Structure formats: C-alpha cells, structure tokens
Amino acid sequence: MTPILLAGPVSEPLSVDEVRAWLQLETHDEDNLLASMIKAARCAVEQAVRRALMLQSWRLRLPNWPQQGEVRLPLSPILSIDAVRGFDAAGNGVLVDLGQFRWCGSLVSLRPESVARSAFAFGVEIDVKAGYGANASDVPDAIRQGMLMLIAHWYAHRSDGLHEASVTHFPAAIAGAIMPYRNMRLR
Image (cartoon, rainbow, N blue to C red):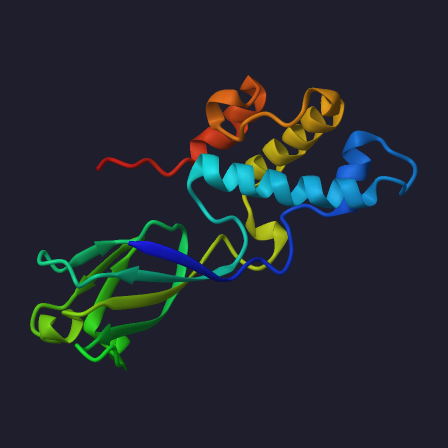
C-alpha cells in the first residue's frame, strides 16, 4: 500500500507563543527556529506513535482489493473515508459508493454482496482524512506536552545536532508522555 499525502496540516499542535513561554524566551528573535522545531517535533512524534496528529488528507493506493475483503489502513486515527476508486484495465477510475464499505478504526471492509472484486482488479485508491482533528486542542495533552519537552531538549542541545527521531532515542520523560498513544502493529 502506497500512502500519498494530499494535504498536510494547516496548523500545528503547538503555537510559537506556547513554545516561547515553555522555553521562557522573552524575545521573538528565534520565532522562525521555533516554528521549524514545532513542525519537526510533530513529524517525529507522528513517526514514533504511528499516528497523524493534526487533520491531514491522504490517498492510499493498492494494486487490488485483498481477497479477504478487508484493508488495514496504515494511518490513524481515521476521521473519514472520502472516496474509494476502483480502476479498470485501461486505467480509468470509477468511484464506488461509500455505502458499500464498513469502517471501524483503521479497518475497511467491503460488504461481501456489494461490489464485484473485478471492479478493483487493476488498482484501488482510498482517500481518507486522518488525525485527531483540525484544532491543536484536539491533540491529546500528553502528546502536546511530549512535543514541548522534545523541543526544549532540541533547543538545549542544538550544538549536538538533532538526534534520530525514534522513540528509542527520545529522553525517557518524552517517551513516557507519548508512548501510551503509540499505534501497535501486530502484523
């Protein structure tokens, strides 16, 4: 499955003012740096917890609809499924009625009696919206707190360079804040 970002977040889970207050900075001299650190922290946390934090639009491409009739989407939390297209041999996409699918969390199921699997024989695209929501307040407070701690860590250790964005490389307090939100993969 190939995920393609169609539209990234229009805002971040933290504002520059929140980060400046957390770092106890009195001037606006480093606001551009803080803005880039906020985006980098969001991306690092999203990778670590395997979740989209802010509202984002994605397109997922599959070579066909799986025989078992279910697709586990690699994104969460899923806010909506906006479109499903099946492709014919000529590469023409046909929208499929969303009523033909059941959706629970990140699992999308094709109703067995609904659409012939041949409609998906030459490819499938699923357009979804993922994230906790469009507002910073939609993101769990513990994740926002973890991002503040991560930014403070990066800010204090700028001369060391940014460390690999992985939970195993996050300081323990940061990992402790965000790990309860990690989307576990069993397969």
